[in-house]
Amino acid sequence: MRFAVTVLAMFCLLCGGASGKEPVQQVRLVFVGDIMLDEGPGRTIAAGGDPLAAFDGALRDADFTLGNLECPVATTGKPLDNKIFSFRADPAVMRVLKGRFSALSVANNHSGDYGREAFHETLQHAQGAGIRVLGGGRNLTEAHAPLWLEKQGLRIAILAYNEFKPRSFEAGANWPGIAWSEDSHVIADIRAARAAGADVVIPFMHWGWEREPEPTERQRQLARLMIDAGADAVVGGHPHVTQGADHYRGRPIIWSLGNFVFDGFELPAAKVGWLLRLTVDKKGVVAWDTLAVRMDESGTPTPLANARTPCGKRGEVAPGLCGAD
Image (tube, rainbow, N blue to C red; front, side, top):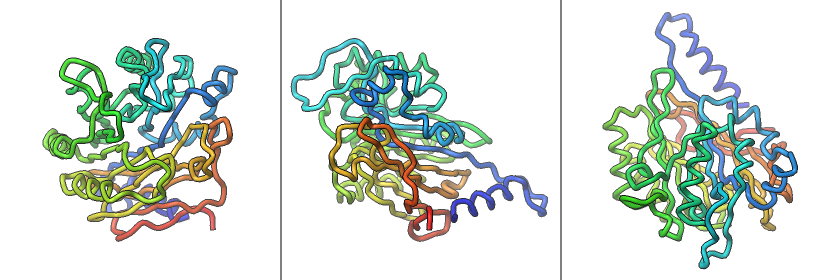
């Protein structure tokens, strides 16, 4: 209910109101957590199914939609010997991502599961589907480059980093890979995005311990550093469970969105994730809320009815809860 009221208020601002002032320009962003399209979800797609069908409207409704692609999409490469779980999705899965996602982060601990050749192939499949990639690239410079989103006169910079092993997936000066979360690099990237004219800067983090319902002190410390450096919000994932939300200096931190499309978990909390909606303007985040999703045994998500999940708006000192009463 609170988000609906906020949206109505924002609509009035966009109309300019009776004051005759220039309309406030705003952009709507959607973030989702881990998208793993191997195994159960991959079998669903191969059989002609669509594990994202229930969220087609929500994914397409935003100006820009982003998620974390938790697997390479390739036919090349071989699984690494030192990993317990290795994923690789068939390129046919791109049909369920195309048109729904503006960009996908590859800054995670599974992007390199089948080696650099498969990682590079993943970048090519994303490009072929019209989906941009962040948090990774053909070299270190590309991996750390912001994803620039521009609309309504706003320039939004999204940065993505991984800090969960193996670090061998990190990009180098002359080889492909992901952006590693080194504090000094992250802070420098945020400041550089601001200096380059970003109105809004949002880091999209792959961090924290798996299956832990609360953020670690490391997450808290880094989130504060990023906001002090100029981030307007911090969005996280990786733990495979949601971890709540906070405000720091009036800016939202969503610690973990949990899973979005993923199978193989027995822990009930790992079968629930959030879809995050953010509305931003030149001053940062105007309002945000989360929608709960539940995954079935095959990893397919559907809306979780009657769930109250974190939400907030500018001027509030702490997040509230929105959803069905």
